[in-house]
Amino acid sequence: MRLTVVGATGSMSGPGSPASCYLVQAEGQCPVSGLLRTFSVLLDLGPGSFGALWRHMDPCGIDALFLSHCHADHMGDIISLQVHRKWGPARDLAPLLLLGPDGTLGRVRQIEGAVGLEDYSGEFAFARVDSATVVRVGPLLLRAFPGQHSIESYGIRVEGPSEADPARTASLFYTGDTDECPSIVKGARGVDLLLSEVGFTAADQVRGIHMDGLRAGRVAAEAGAGTLVATHIQPWTSHELVRAELARTWDGPLSFARGGAVYEL
Image 1 (spheres, rainbow, N blue to C red):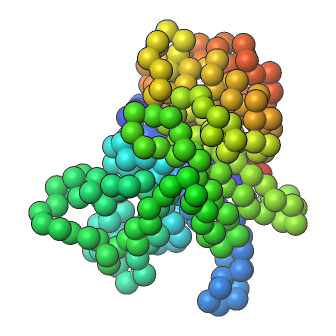
Image 2: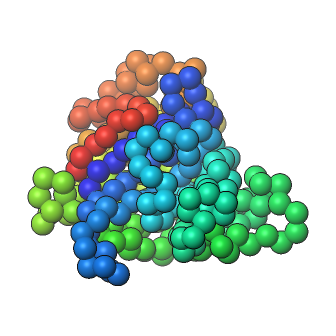
């Protein structure tokens, strides 16, 4: 299993990266042909990310899209994907599995400016996410864990075959947008890689929306994560400031998500 950072900038696309979008891939047996192929799942699809995705894969090969929540910075490029599947090279493919919180269809309509009750049934197969959601996509197992954000939001745990040893199960957890909370720690428990938002710094006093470096580091430590990858950092925030905050509560391996970075698990 491998993780490719397509976009990582917090709250908007930035000068060095699109907004949030992460590609998780693993090799597995196709249930139709019986042949080995690459399964691809997208976690979020923020502004600018659909174009950047083409550098890493043919979008016709996406097997599922899992939206952590319905803020535009995490799903703004959904209409680019919809156009590709309705009018472009993917128009003859079966509807794509689109997992998201309650209200996802309505948000897609809002972003498109749809007139009437468009259901996108030719492009997407909508599936509502809740705290009990467990979905298998080829060799990848995805589980949802509620976050603490300004709207309904979920962290996503993904398990799949290790790149080095396919007989071993590798794991990652993507926090989505959230503040520190027990369910996020639970979802991240024992993962090889924790992809954690750090949308705030310690100077931001508002709670219940994002984590600062201290809280993100504490989640990683409490969960016993192997590696922490910090993401969703605002384009005006210094990575060195975030690093200094994280160092107060986390002393394990640390990196910062950058567009194009690949992590083999």
